[in-house]
Image 1 (cartoon, helix red, strand yellow):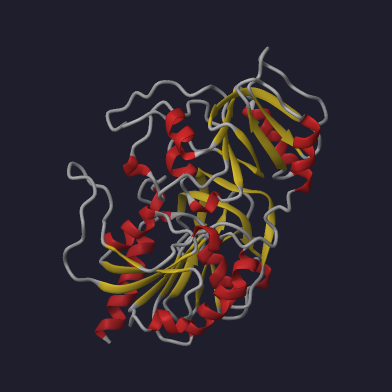
Image 2 (image 1 turned 135 degrees about the vertical axis):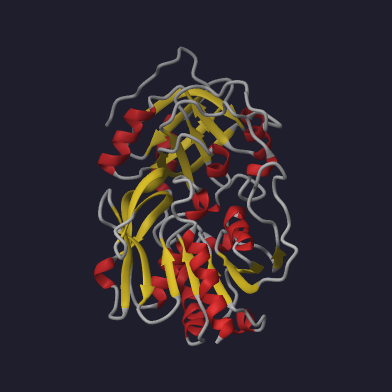
Length: 388
């Protein structure tokens, strides 16, 4: 791609790709510039959860679904305190919200949170380009006056280092440990706290989503969250009955520099371990496997994954640009799930121990309940250990 596309007479935003392509559109949200990797997400709902998912650090999200903003925003749907994705690209400018749960509109929410966005683009064409050429480095600019230094924006996109070799978990992890007891949303009470004692779980936060922690609480866990840099000694000092490895952003090999020794230390203990997304990749690295950068990654809520042990197909939510290389899995590690889109690895377990992980997000409910059994499996493993 080399030509420029200018669908509006007075563009107030532009998206500059590292190959020199420039897309013009209407800016909304915050003004200014940002540089990141551009990915596309095929989900039809959940734009607020996507923008606040820490796994999107260092990325601008192109939404293939055109109706973005129509259900507004509500604080209950934030996966973390503030948006983490660097920006948003949409087909149609966001409309006024129409939903009984809405407490605000998306545009004002994005402006307040400092996220730069662009509307009016041919997102399907942009998505095809990403699929064919890989996730590009881009610069996104929003200026109400329409003044853009295109050469400088393209240069910034080309100069950006990219996600390979980048440890972003340290940027999105919690600053200190905390307890979590809020359970999954349920009608009509909404979110309720867990009051009964449960199994002691330490969750290592590489960029944990709130709804994952809620699912752990609903499965019967008393959750203590520790920062990504926690050592095995710090984890075991809390006397956990299970350890959870959370989702997160960036290159797993870079985060693994400090996370892998911790996980290897925990694997020497006889306690259940469960990982999701980056946590899945961290576990694989700790077991001796390798991870690789994908062409354009998996981002959406409609990804079919096959459970190789039961034959069941789950519809899953995914957000990852790196994957575990199944060819490098060592003996004794079983590949449990694979993507039906491209055959990439989506799950592993140790053959004779309650240690397992999945690449997708079972808490996101795209199925809607296809994958919740994983939290129950983790809880059951802890109950068996307790009984023994």
